[in-house]
Length: 170
Ligand SMILES: [Zn+2]
Image 1 (tube, rainbow, N blue to C red):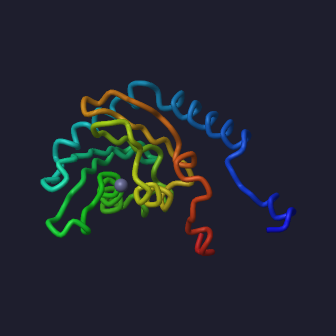
Image 2 (image 1 turned 45 degrees about the vertical axis):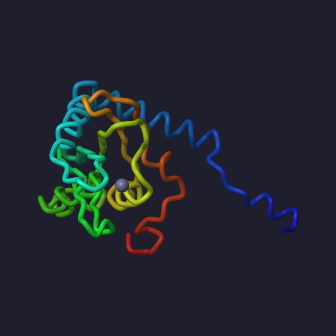
């Protein structure tokens, strides 16, 4: 590698992180604690609908759209394992089936709350699914009682995302 190529290294810089912190704080302020807790509680309730006999790892999700509608999702497993649907994914599916794209356009996700045991964030696949329907959104991680563990942004979870814009379709 030639020396000048070292200038091409990319990591999230301070400006990017500050921009995301500002986005998160602004969205928290606009939505308010009541709505955020409602989302976390909805995700915890959706978790109880999980069909996850193989992993025994139920997950719930609650998606808030840009028009303030809430859609629930949960993980759904199959004996063949690879056909498993994740909670965030089924919430997105529920929104699309209710014509979210028709009503709000492709970017219809404003926030996604996810509830499960532990403190991990959405998996890589779900981050990509969210990036299909939001340039950025809040991602709220909650416990199984609906208490919020952390609030972050999709762009912090998936920097340099590959999106429809990269295919020139948007
Ligand atoms: Zn996932």
